[in-house]
Image (cartoon, rainbow over all chains, first blue to last red; front, side, top):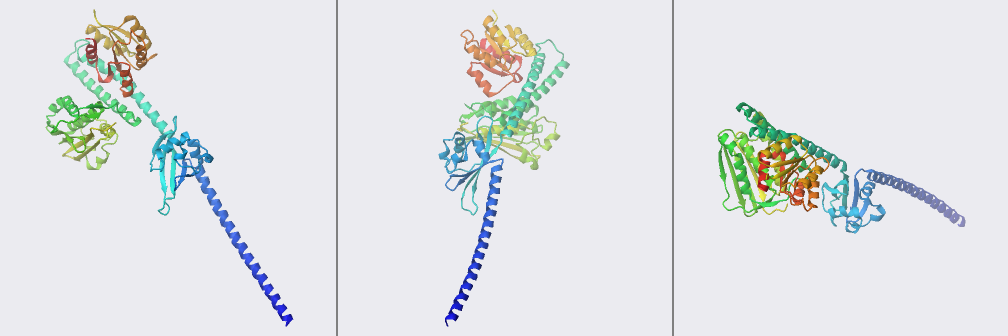
Length: 390
Length: 122
């Protein structure tokens, strides 16, 4: 009996030992797998971090409480800050770092949505800032802030602008010499001229004027692109501008036998805050275009009104001209656009007038648009707010 | 006695044309071909009006105006700018320095310059 018991105990022990060994082996296997997986994840993480670190764009990650949880090498460089100094701090908590403050002012404490906003970090160092909320499963985990260095593009743009400006300036000098000489010849200040000579000189004078106009347009565009186009606004009467432009165009209206109708506002227009010369340029562009593209004996209706509820002036020029082909209407306000039907006519134009006009009106907080049917005519509209601060 | 006008301009042909036109209108004309010479001449000859270019060798028109402001004898001489530039920033600067008018050369002709001169000093 005792021997049987001992045998049983031994067998049990052996079984237990075998089981334990099996369990240990299984556990070791699992551990090995876990370790492998850990290493794989670690490698993945390192790879991702390497990608983030070596990105040419600066990257900042803020958590759901708007605290900085990651910053890459480029962002450190751009903002001249060290990871140690900034990690875990909120946007407002980072305001004491001078370079971060500029970015913080743009983002706001809650990190608002920003898309390709330019930020000058001093000197010629300009970055473009965009934010992107991180919403993997619809729940906001934080915000990604991307900083893209655009200093080089800005520099090229500046050099281009300076070149055009300088070239235009250098071109204006000889053109003014030509203009003055021809004008004095025409005025008889430099002696008598024959009728035939007068005729030639007059035509040359007109060609020179066209060249001057083109250079002026190019200069205006450079200034628009540099963002230094408008002069200080003053209060002025829009109606007076329209009347003076119509006066200026009178001769051409008579020559083309155009039936001109002027619809004046019912009430006296309030004065509006504007850069008078530039608004005059817009009115002149719209009226001159209408005259240019309306055939002999056509009709032009110029209308000036006021929208009391919106406190804005509405101005329109309707013509019975050649119209703008439908497939080209989306390009009307782009630089150097000229309608295909217009190119066939013998009219001058740089294709810059409407681009410039749109920029002027929008800089005044207004809008410009048109309706057109090829072969029937075009109506250009513009609205100008009277109380807009420029 | 005819009124005296100082032209400060570096473009020879424009000087010739303006000078001719102004003399025809009965003015006395003196000419300087850069800003430094202009300042020297206005101290010596006390002109009644100055037609001043902006982009010039040695000293530009805006610098000339700034120097004039510092001098009691020159400060009140009326200045009309004649320039190829129409940059609002520059026009604003010139007005702050006391310029009476700003003419862009390609937008005006000699007769209109004379009209502006007459408006200032008769």
